[in-house]
Length: 403
Image 1 (cartoon, rainbow, N blue to C red):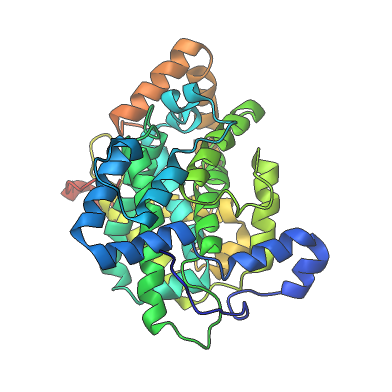
Image 2: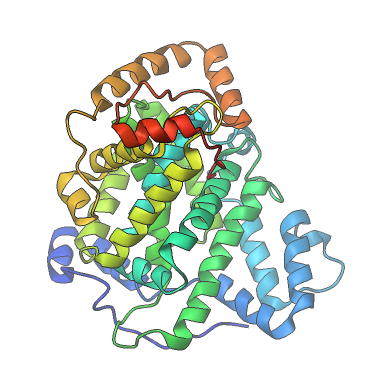
């Protein structure tokens, strides 16, 4: 079974295509095709789930957990094809790498991972006006901000865990769910998608943007608070996330598989050259996401910072991660020099990072701490704030961790 979508010409969802083609050549032409590219395997599975119902769902769930060979009955055609692709491990994958997990991300203190990596990755996704407009149609930005944060945080943490991407592991299952969720969004959106806006909703270009958000953009954000990684760590990071790209069905989508930040920046530059400026939907979604993260984090054990302080922190991080001009277009407020102590935070984190990775034992302990969850990395003395912050801190309202 295959899923067929009506052909759509790329137009309004991309900008500067002629200039991008002249500058980037074949890579730009390749990415332009992704605008109208869905995911044939995942799209066909969604069609089979709708057609066969419980039978297809049980086959899919069992096959994802235990493998295609474990199924007693012949599964639906599309389900079998998807499972076969997922279980065909690329030749370059080191099995030990999957057992160790994403050791680079695991070395990041959990609180900073959430406040920087998750927040910036979602902001990068929302910066696409087409994605933002589609998400804005699915519910109130304020009401949906917390569930989306939670879903992104859970997926990221399950994905980086040791053994998380092994077949049937939590990261493996969550990553395939992300892939199928995009396919479901495509199927639903096409029923009432504005035909005046050409291009396929929730296509491979959007998923590629999400992938870059959790690699390049996340670590640009972490670098803003002084958590840098070495060239060797970059290579480990992209090797691991290249397997995530395989599970997401992006093997054919990346013109050149990024091996480090420089490769990823070239891909990001190409995407930026072909993406229109963010609109009001993007700004509303990012503002709602920052507010939700501040509410969720304020008052959690070990984080003695009030909501306003956390908003200051995230605004400062996002503006450094994206740059001043893109930050302005995304509606990210400028943090005044009086309340911006990012240079101090960066210096302290760089010192802590040095000793944290000084030896194999200390690096191992850092990964264990990342698995255990958030710790007392942030203190209310880090950022000053006004009367409203102090009043909030005195209230000491407990909150739920967003991820």
